[in-house]
Image (cartoon, rainbow, N blue to C red; front, side):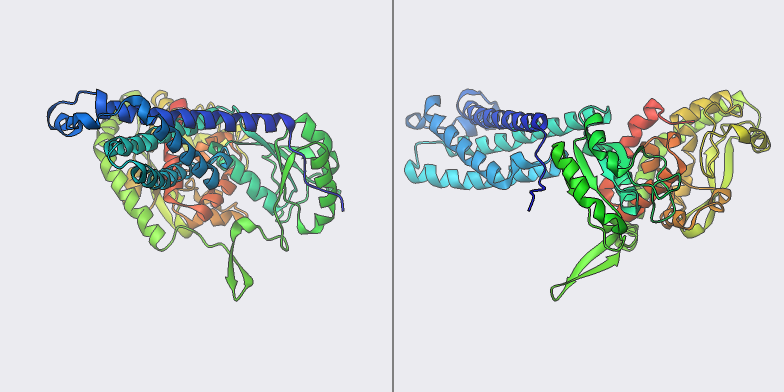
Length: 498
């Protein structure tokens, strides 16, 4: 049988090995530095007050020269690196979160501490200061954690600027590939860059799709037969094979193309065209049980999200009130008309509510809209114009900074909206939805969301819907926090705001 395991890209392998060695060296220096700092704090630093009395109260005969702690430092280094190796510190993927790093650091340090104390004080119980060893472990945890915080922040800063991302190519044009591509686009902080996808055509103008919806907003690179050439042309780092069930016969050729071009690949299994991103897999007496994934924002999660919304709104309300007063004055001085703009929007499960915004357009904006339809720059049922002539001078600034949405905090307090959620749609837009689009209405609309931090008006309607559905199915408080943090630079830079 032919070995279908791809040979890893030599340049990538060299880079990975260099990165591993660099982190090994940095960690080793940090561990030794921690021992040196502990010795200095214990014996050399003059502390004031009671701290000094506690630290310096060492009988002369127990004073130890610094070179006596060299074996302690080397032993600690050995124990820590063994623990790091066993726990997979240097095998963590580059997009591993800070929690994964800190967990290994804490567990490894705790284990190494126990072993070191047993070894040292079984050998010479009164020779070494226990405080030095305790301080050494504290410094190890602190400094290694700071190194990892810096590492994760630098990586994510580079990735946010499009630097150093792993280039992914998807094979397949069905529902699974849609889900994968949406997930990649929705999580740029993980260091992924979507090159595009390949899929065979069925005699029509578009790639095959299992749900009748084409991923036109992603870059279609051609048929599967072009894969080998495309892998070299686009310098692909990883191929994800997500072939529909009826195209599994293409798998051997895809794997061989990856093997010959030395590109890693991963296979997403398809069971009768069920997306495994949307199913829960359980077990009963050894038998796998598969069911559809439910909306994640319900039950206790819904209560938790609501409490968070109210808490954050009340916390920011004093600042919002001051800013709103200044904005109201500016709107009144800039153009005639009301300060607030109200509009019917569609909320959870299709319920209508009145959404509030600061007015950014002239009073007869809706009448003028009919004359501007031919200039619409958005696809689907959304109406957007980059340089909309209906905007007032203050309105253009409010749109660019998103301050026109501050009155929606009242909608959040009323329970009609949330801080994070799908974009609130108008009844006219919802009337044009395809049946699968309606799933985005199963969560409260939000002041910000995945759509807003993934390009806002620069994204297509279908991409917006898929991002919203992804959010509905995968919600967590950490996801909300990440979206809120990503919203800040998006608003400050005005990306996609018009």
